[in-house]
Length: 373
Ligand SMILES: [Zn+2]
Ligand SMILES: [Zn+2]
Image (cartoon, rainbow, N blue to C red; front, side, top):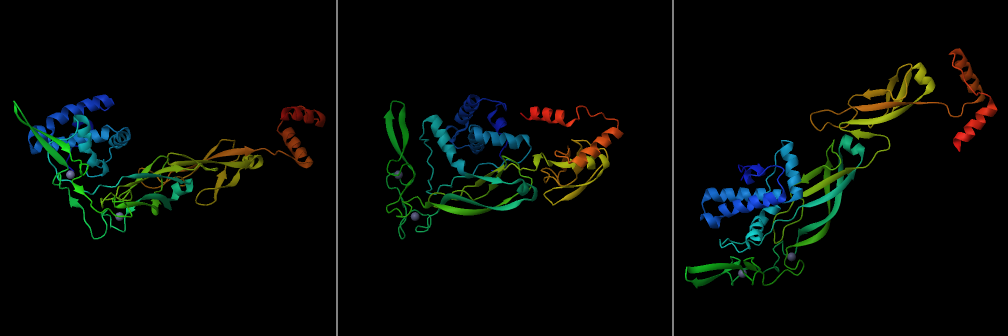
């Protein structure tokens, strides 16, 4: 199955921006040509039919198509869904197109692959920087213990449906002037399953599985971003009647952080620098996720000056190491200078030849009062 052509658009012979209708039309045309019933079981056609079906299963589902497009554009490896939960829907797709009841007989198995589940996990920005271990709590189907997933009462077994001899189909032959015409219908006795359970398990009512609250540990990878999905193979729902598990998808959101903002692999923050320090130069303490760091501020620093701490950002999504922490200065002015401080500030202004207009107390108060209102 691995050597199947993985370009679904090429398989169906459509453009990447093909509409759902175009895709449907292309599939319908190709599936008619290559369906095993039409080709008499020619192996090349059968392989082609599988490719067409797989391509259609993905491209006809908006969500799967989006996922596939993303992987394709990113040059990544697409995990063929063949053999995964929706592989079993291929025949259903065909049936939905051509009215069901393909005349090919196929042996039915009772086991059904479990569905995949998506759960949501909110992490902090610190989790993003260092990675983290979290526990997911959610409900999923687990194999029934009473019947070991078989769906039958202990000591009993499913039996091959006597009405259809296990094929899931009944055939009716009609004689016409053109010869015998064989039509197949899904078997009513077993709903097309090919099996009947004479004595269903009392715990799971014959399904072989039960919903349970579970805890699943998950390793949050460093550098994960909002909307990323992580797949945990075989952690989805247990299948019916002992079928394999589906997969678990963990979708991440990142809680906003008061202090840091992320852009790509870099983190952004700010640091308050008192007016005097900004003028004279010196060291300031900066918070980082790795602890406080001392950063030098040059004499004459203005607000919005960019300082950079290399390697204190988020783990790089491509390549090794971490991005940077980018710090903007916010030069602060005294808001409540004392009488002595005001005297010094006036003296400083005088020395620098900076005229302070409207400095008399009364006027200052009134202007300030108005601005505050
Ligand atoms: Zn059971
Ligand atoms: Zn039957």
